[in-house]
Image (cartoon, rainbow, N blue to C red; front, side):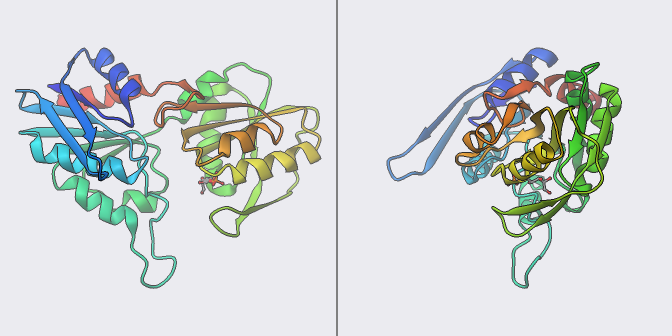
Length: 279
Ligand code: R5P
């Protein structure tokens, strides 16, 4: 089996190849002046492991082009499954984006491995999906540190509970109301963070709006220091600046989306899943 690196996940792809001890195939990606993408793969192998986070629409085109040229079996690792937040028809006539993506990917991949897909609802659209949980890795990163983990909403509380158990620390959650894609409202519930080091833990940080509002509330409640950790550091536009200028002391993320904040690698987690799948 050869591993195919793609522009969205070169570092994680390389780490996975090293973990599994498989060859990285020679690939060429280029963009024509009109914006169209071009892909060429130099591999005679009949089995491929493709590692490609869906961080933009280009990634989807790249996958379609790879599917066209790769012969034989494909195991597809999508560390960050973009489009998963549009997992239902919120308003009549809307496309269920993740359903369209699932259909596309499953047409060619034998197996799809992802990490913390956004919701159970999103997962239901796949037949060949294995969804890995990186929360224990976040827990391990904070093990034995003097802190409390906070989920910015009740929806993420179960995930945070998993991380907190591994870290052996307390945890709690806030109440969040989403107003639109950029705006959220965080309200207080009885929560004891006075004089404590707090880590806000979420699956995705996208615009940073959720974490910024949660940070404000936590400082109001007397927190000593607030940092944030997530699986997928999407960090759209100026989110990192927004976070670091709002009093967030540190941003910690995995390498499902490759950013300078990717201090935790999911490579070993993915390796185990791939090897299990090859048995
Ligand atoms: C929402 O359900 C997710 O768990 C995240 O809280 C959300 O995606 C974060 O988005 P943003 O950073 O744009 O507030």
